[in-house]
Length: 232
Image (cartoon, rainbow, N blue to C red; front, side, top):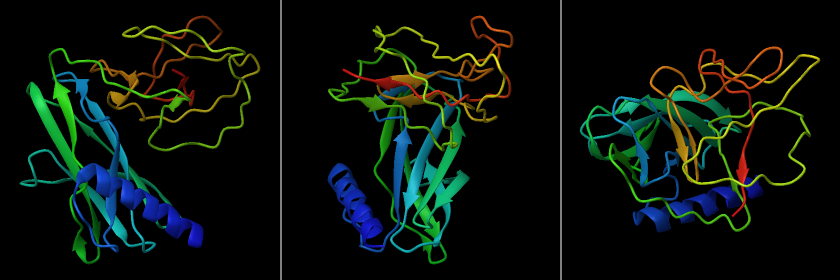
């Protein structure tokens, strides 16, 4: 229990610095993990918004809501899982319909009502944007909305050089059959600098192929739990 309390205090402190808004110690917090702020998205293409809601009191969060118009209206996110009662992971698919900067913020809902609004994330919709600055001197991991337990030690023997603004497919081959898969996962573009898992308006980023060869098939916006890691 003390370890969880210290963890929550650290997250609360970080949120306070980023948002510049003071919250009461017992207030639930909402953290948006993707898209990262100042990322870009396309008009008419689903954008996957993910994050976590944190509470110092276990089991109190009943829902998480997002607003795209400064709090005039709110939408309820899809609840994915609750961890130890202190953290609830969620996601929401939003399809932008106009170009320009869009700002999204969230709040957690408890039996006492809606909590304070969390830090805002701004996304540039349509048009060109300046590349985001990322700091990956050690590594940058692709944080996914929720994770299956997969015991697979296969990795690349050496890092693979990559170039900006190019698409890469990271795959593995299982000749004996069997693989990890979750349907209805990449239901929108998932943006976490320096990564983008694109959605083309029809299907998500996850691809597969039976019998070997380059994977190009897609089924129900599935993910196959290959987690990329970038080292700067």
